[in-house]
Amino acid sequence: MVYGQKFIPEPHVFHAAVLIDYKIYFIGGNDPNKTDSEQNPEGEIFYFNIDPNDNENLFSWVNIQSQGVKLPHTFSHAADIGGVNQDSIFIIGGAHLDEKDTNYLYRFDTKTNELSVPVIQGMAPPTRMGMKTINYEGKIYTFGGRTFNTDPSKSIYFNQLDILDTINLNWQVGNIVNSPGPLTGYTATLVNGIIYYIGGRSSEYVFPPMTDIFQYDIVGDKWSLKKATTADADTMPGSRTGHSAVLYNGKIYVYGGSYYTSETAFDMPAKETFAMLDVVTLVWSIPPLNGTDIPALAYHTASLKGPAMFISFGAHMESPDTLYQGSNSTYVFFLSEPIIGWGSILLSGTTSQKTSTVMPPSTDTPSSESVSASPQNTMSKSVIVGISVGSVLVVLIIFVVFSIAYKRIKRNQSNIKREFSHPDGQSQIPPDDDKHPSMYLQQ
Image 1 (tube, rainbow, N blue to C red):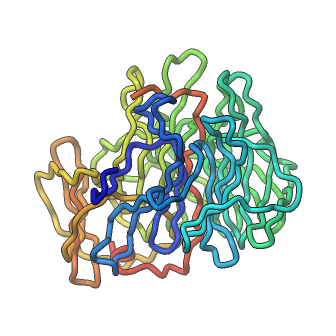
Image 2 (cartoon, rainbow, N blue to C red; image 1 turned 120 degrees about the vertical axis):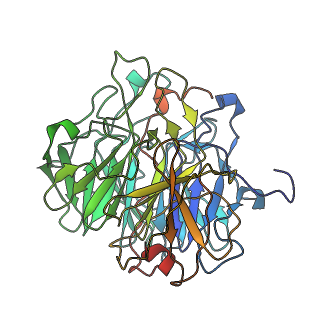
């Protein structure tokens, strides 16, 4: 990066994302448009500023790596909040391109930007990739995963629940009776002390159906299997890996993912890119969208800020007969709307919008909050997010800031080896009592 030049992240897959305060931290991952030898030998750590009170730096990217933080090139890992003050990020597992890097647990202090190797008491679990984590009361819950192997058929899949106490710094082991069994590439979503596990695969070509919803009761330390249904069998979401999930207003919104068999030469986009599960009735449905040409992504991260779900980075799955193309774009979906508006933001700041509409603010209050990213942009006092309605129509939707102020956002290879297939890399972020500025609440 040239001195004085603004940092623009490259495409990423197999990364992790964590939100602390109003910074979305992105950690590690691969650039799918580069070969292994072309990858950065150091793992990247950078963040995206979403603080609406910081007008000068709102929606800007900051590369922490340039400040001296050194992380080995790491991918397919997990990362989550921890520590006494919940201001540290614990980076767990994954794989390294350089096998000489044998440490697979790091602690990143977001106050000092210091990366360290914490001393953890207890028996450390085996190193693995493709896990998902949930942070609950200072403990990080990690399930499943698999070993990294250049021959995917030789990977070992784990049926194991490990608990990292980030306050007392010790490892614990959770119950696995009635668990899903070996699993990788799933999503884990926290709902009132219950972790919902959705999708993934239990071996190289075995994908559990989306009707299987495994639930882990954290307090009771017990598992149960619930069966999901759908009102329309034709819209039942297909099995997948590399997808994402966020919780909003009693619904789990699942996005993207890929599917493949021993007979398919390439990964295929999962059936129904965007699906919604009612956490009470366990009924799947397809949320209505303002435009249906949403990108089919996998190995991205998804996050929630108020009612806005951000989909960041990942691999485009629209053309499975070609090499996958990495994305460094961010897409935003407004989940509070009866017909969900959505739009894309390009790092270049270019836009192809043809029409625009102004929508009044709503008083919807989100039920949870999470992470995500957006590219840099120069803002005034209005926030307008481009909403895609097909290839030739873009509808602008308003983020309301302080009831009258708006800030404008402009719309917007190499092959990914199947061995690297793993969950979306996002980390579940607990709600912060809905203390969001109005720009995130009122949409």
